[in-house]
Length: 92
Picture 1 (cartoon, rainbow, N blue to C red):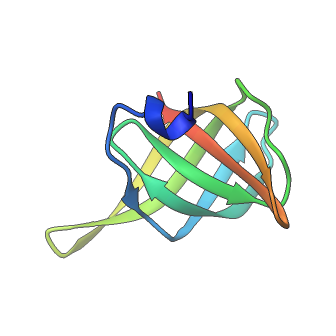
Picture 2: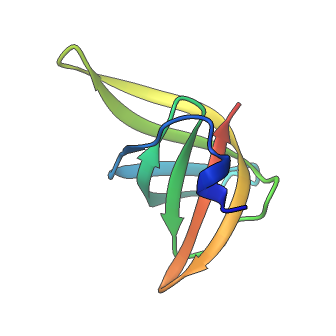
């Protein structure tokens, strides 16, 4: 079964920079490509490990106001793509 067929929540395009923090304290700036109420699709030059816990920080605009989101997530899948890796993170 295709992973897109398994999705229960609609994804919305969401192209912006995300500050990614890992449990070892390292931080990096990566890119997102879509988001849903339960997770986010990300792209990075370096692979992540399935099951890895991350801290994500990004901005949303709500009622014309910028709101910083700081949320934990778990890597659910990783896919090698041209020039990097796509990976899905489920919000915790």
